[in-house]
Image 1: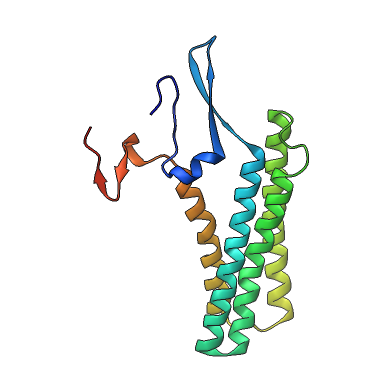
Image 2: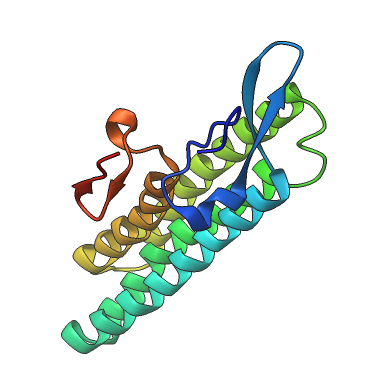
Length: 170
């Protein structure tokens, strides 16, 4: 830890997504988010969800056939499309011009994501006969990609550095 700076990142390679700014006049530290890097992280989550969708669809095809594979692709596609809409609306354009605009863009993106998930599930369930386990299982698997990425950005529990399951003694 550097003197006068605070790092809340648990994973060193994710430290690039946040930067620490020292406010000399107040004596406080501020953790700011670089929007371009956050957008890149959000789009990499979408790419990860697409990869999980393909893997689950292939596994469903091997286990239960092409109908299950299509159902899995639909479930993963719903989650991936919704996350893409959120990433584009939440982090696109001039959303970082000020705090209110950034919050508004994020809320609009999240609302569009929820609405798109509902609409796409209704369309898929009304228009085709799906294999429920394959579709919902893949949806949940792609949703887990988002939560794993989010968990990697959180500080460690208790605020202590933990190296591979062992507490670091200093």
